Length: 245
Image 1 (tube, rainbow, N blue to C red):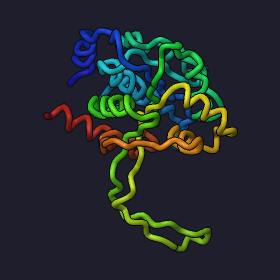
Image 2 (spheres, rainbow, N blue to C red; image 1 turned 120 degrees about the vertical axis):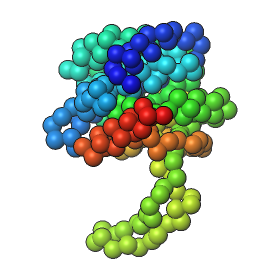
Image 3 (cartoon, rainbow, N blue to C red; image 1 turned 180 degrees about the vertical axis):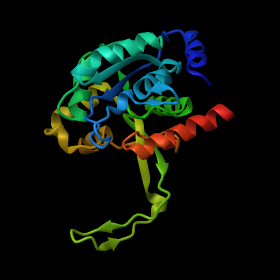
Image 4 (tube, one colour; image 1 turned 60 degrees about the vertical axis):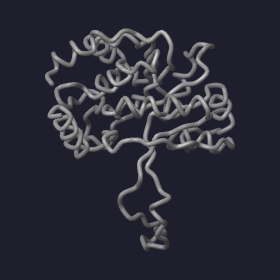
């Protein structure tokens, strides 16, 4: 599928009248990309952040998109939103000193009617529609939900000297992804209770710290996070495979 064809496909998508808000965290430093800003790297001819926005633009379970970004990136993200006709984008806020602080700032622009919300990594541009909807559906019953995939490799816990000390049963291990869904008010309270947000690697950890049980639903191995240059090649391969179907 060409870039022009993709734009025409999404042009017909109308903003959802119902649905849930999604916060996209895109304020990271891209420190492992050798100086490149991963949000604007093109995969399959489309910038990463634009592809991420398009995933939620076309999902009828999502009503609006809020992005937390580096202040210098905000104008370019807005230009991309206009170019790719992202009608659900309502706000772009300046991110904080860490991911969770950025999410907290984005939560400040939610409406009082937003009782539940999704949180997604800006660098996960290939999240399938079915995964988004699965998290949304489960969030109707639970206060904290994440998508996840089974760990494929054997995992070992090591000590400070690098020696393996334990081999957990991988049947009980999963690798969590985003989107993650939360009850808005309970998550706000959990963030206040958490203290130093930089100590947490994802939003479910904050909910766990506050005493909430986290429900997992099936994620997708396609839903990779663009972190290193190797991930770009994997993303290109997924896109090529999807276009051939």
